[in-house]
Length: 134
Image (cartoon, rainbow, N blue to C red; front, side):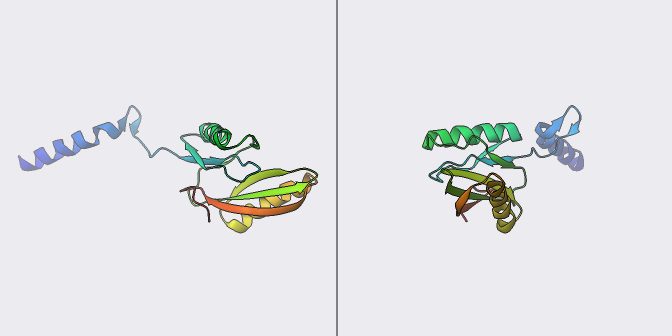
């Protein structure tokens, strides 16, 4: 009788996690950042890449009028965003995301180099998991 009660209690506790197709997997969480020329944009999160990017653009617009409108996004919580700003031919900032600081920085610098920008500087790194500067 006690074993049956325990099984019923377990089923009741797990019921909210049960979907039509079976046991639900953990929802993915996407992180995104839309950099601005002040390098003050926060990381934003969403359940999908589109939602995270939309929220990142909205978050940037709350703190700046100079948003890049090209958020970098990832669903890997261990990833790092590199925020780089360049001065020539005009001021521009961008973000790239990768598993390591070095890879993220290299990606954004390569993008700027291909676009003909120079006088670039790393502004900071940000954690995809927490949004904290690193």
